[in-house]
Image (cartoon, rainbow, N blue to C red):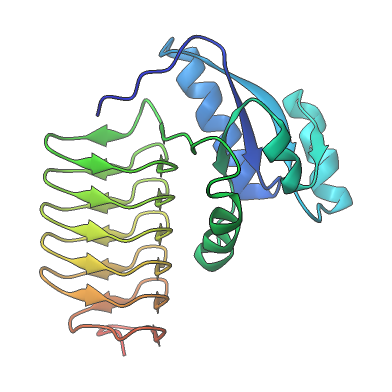
Length: 217
């Protein structure tokens, strides 16, 4: 993949909710594996709840302030927000005013040959990417999600745990593939579309559509 990081590269996580704290765990796993460890400066969040702030304490980190603070920090960042639409809005606001977003690959994820991973991509533990796959900016593949050959995922796509995207698929930007859902070979899911948990996509899904069930309609 060609990602080269210096040791103890500063990084900030945008969003201190559960998704962001899970990404903190990915960084810890990368560091434990000795792969150019990161130094987590802290979290930024525009409206953190008191509960989420308390949950930062056991991690040994803290909330630094609103996300605009990132423009003043000499650090890379990663967006720890699970909702793909909100993630896209945050990414657009940070483009050009902050340093590039960091790609993160959990040591227990598998990435095959001839794949393209853009900035801000996050692969959780157990994620599988086979070959000739293109992952756009800020794509998140959650635990045990799989993406097959020759598939393209647009920017800010969210693939939830144990979802399976088959080969030669096209997933539009800001789309969400729900937990345990499947997208069959050669199907497309439009921009901003959502596939419900356990759904099975057997025909193309239009932009902005929500589908669920087997087959997903």
